[in-house]
Amino acid sequence: MAIASSAQTRPAKTKPAPGKKASLERAAAWARRAPLLPALIFMIAVTQLPFVITIAISFFDWNALYPNDVKFGWFDNYVAVFTDEALRTSVITTIVLTVVVVLVSLVLGLAIALLLDRHFWGRGIVRTILITPFLIVPVASALLWKHALFNPEYGLLNGVLNWVGNLFGFQAPQPDWISLQPLGAIEVDLIWQWTPFMMLILLAGLQSRPLDVIEAARIDGATGWQVFRFMTLPHLRRYLELAALLGSIYIVQNFDAVFTITSGGLGTANLPYSIFQTFFLAHDYGAASAAGVVIVIGSLLLATFALRTVSTLLKEENR
Image (tube, helix red, strand yellow):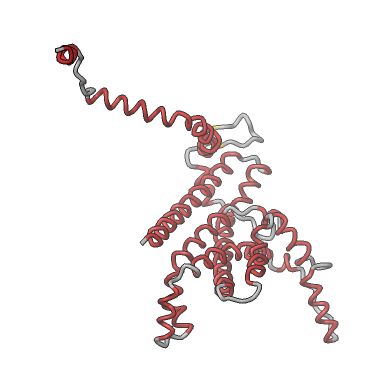
């Protein structure tokens, strides 16, 4: 009788109303996210606010040499980026520099990766030595090429020419490499530094090949070229795209090599160097900001393609 009485007096459990349940779930979600909010706010303040301010400045005709003549200029700065001859030339130089460096680095990286994919004594040491150029600070790499290799008086290249000339009894020419091929000198430096990066990505692709299928193809009489053309190269397609896109994103923004080797002279000023000149020398903040926004948009487009390629690679690996 006592148990029955207790059951009669105990209040029955009721389910929360749908609206109240949703409120509780939102409160629990915010409680989980709250510790991350300071980091999120800091990241937005550090990375996004400067970009938003840059976009805002890009719409103003703002030259620090004329502080009393700041006015809203709509898209004048963006029109100037693509119509001003100097800026248009720097855009073309950026495209040429990026395409040449990425293509040559990809070809050399693929050739080296194919060699390193074979088993031989000391392969680990050779791989470590070949990666070294990519680990060098970009400014140090540019200084190395400018002074130790390209210098017409004491550089290694002219030293080798002089040695060969003395060996065969003639006066070897001593060219000024940077003056003769200024853009080529920058490209050589960047190719030397970025080939190991391409090689690493392509070597990873080569080592993920299904070796049993390749072995079966060789047993069926396929030549080495046929295996490479119809099996290896299609397998490496995604890796080639990934290496090209990631390399392009970084080389489009290259400033160190241009500044160190030629100081933007002799027609080698790319868009990042032109932004430096426009901002720090001409003090035209509006035009420099517009050029910066153009670079960011181009880099975002390349990054989008890179992320899609990575996503496709991961899907193929999980099949």
